[in-house]
Image (cartoon, rainbow, N blue to C red; front, side, top):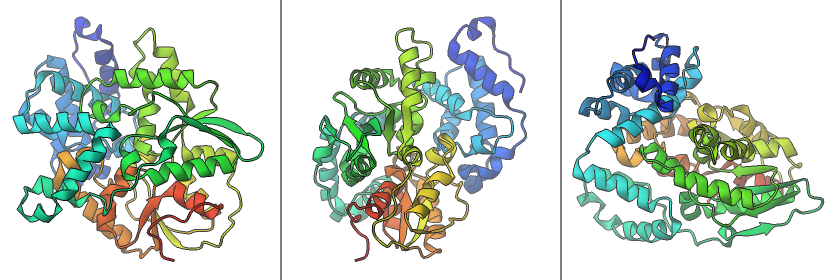
Length: 424
C-alpha cells in the first residue's frame, strides 16, 4: 500500500511503525473471509482491509477522528484472525492499537460512552472495587426486564454466585513437590481473581505437582490490557509489573492462564521499545511470559491418576490462537490427560468476548456468542474447555454443558480437585 507521510510525521516512532505496517498490505482481501464483524455486517469498512484504509487516511492527514472512523474501529474485536489469515504479515494489532490511541486523543465521545469507559478502566483492573461492584450488579437481576439492552446483556454474564476470595492471590511462594525443576511467577490477573479464583488455585496445584516453585510477587496488578485496548496509555501498569517481577528474583517463566493477558505481556517489549529506562527490561519480561500450556508442554504432563474420557470441546480463545499462535498444544495436553477431544467448527471465529467488547458492543457480541455457543452445543460435549476467563464468561450462560479452564482439567486428571459444576 502506498503511503504519504511527511518527514516530520515519520519522526514519530508510532507513525514510522504504522507506515511499515500499511506498506505491507497488498489489498488482497483474504482477511475479509475470517473477520467476524464482516461476516455479520457485510460492510467493507467493518473488515480489516476497510479499517486499514480508514486508519491510513486518518493518520496520514493527522486529522481528528471522525464519527465514521470511530464507529468502525470500535466494532473491531481485535480478535487478530486477520493476522493469521494475512499472507503478507500485516501487523494489524499494532496498527489498530495506534489508531485507538489517536481516537482517544482527538475524539470526544458522547457523555454516557465516556462514563462507561472510565468506569471500566477504573473498576475492572482492581479486584477490591470489582467485587463490590459485581455484588451491587447482582442485586439488579430482578429488574433485568426493565433495563436497557446494554445493561441486560451485562447482567446476563454475571455468575450464578460470587466465588469466595482465594488466599492464593496474596504475595507468597508455593514450594515445588519433590525436586524443583523451575521457578516461575504466576500472573493472578484482575477480573479472574473475582470471577474465577479456582483457575489460579488449579494452576498452582498443577505447577507445584510438576516440580515448580510458584511465586506470587508483591506489586503485580493488571497486565494493562484493559486500558490499552480502550486506547489509553497503560505504560504505568506495565512498568509497575516489570519492576515487581524483576524484584522477585531469578525466574524461568512468568506463567499466564488468561490468554488475553498473555498476548499483552508478550507485547511489553514492543510497547516500551522507545523507553530508554524500560526497553530492555520489558523485552526480558516478554521473553519470560508463557501460557500455562506452554510451560506444561515443556515440563511434560504426568500420567493421569484418574480415568477421564469425557468428551471435551476445546474453545480456542482468539488471543491464544491468533495473538500467541498457540494452537494444537492445549488439545494435545487434554488428550494426554485422557479426555476425548471433539473439534469445534469455524474455530477461528471469535465468541464476542474480546475484553470489554461484550460490554461496549453488546449487540454484535451477543450474535457472535450465540453463534459460537450453538456450534459447540451441536457437538454435545460433556465439558467445554477454554483458556481465557473472558470467553468462559461470555459462553457460560449460552451453553448446555459446563465450561471450565483447561488448567482445571489438567489439574483434576493428574491428582487435583474436580472442577465445580461437572457431573458426579
